[in-house]
Image 1 (cartoon, rainbow, N blue to C red):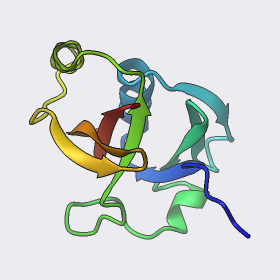
Image 2: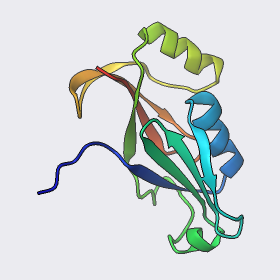
Image 3: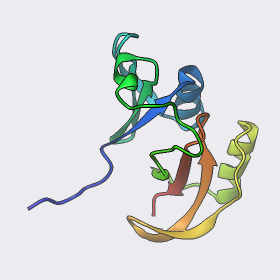
Length: 134
């Protein structure tokens, strides 16, 4: 029997590696865990107990995935990152200070049931749902 425990990793293809590393590390608090040589094009970021893999589209690995990300050709709708609980206004102020636009919190259903979350976009236009852990 298989029992799912959570997200292991998400792979995002990118043409903006430095911007993506800044967004996920400096704004959202991940950290670089492992980097393969530049020609391979993979940087793995630790996000709690999961990984976010960034693959450059012009690298050896990236070329296997096809064209660069675009609004009409995205292969990811969105993914949700659980964060440590904090007051909504504190989270909104933090995003504003980092020039990350968002529409605000709404009640949504997720892995832990209903809870408040918001959507933001990373530098490649991927939709990232941010949800404080319940």
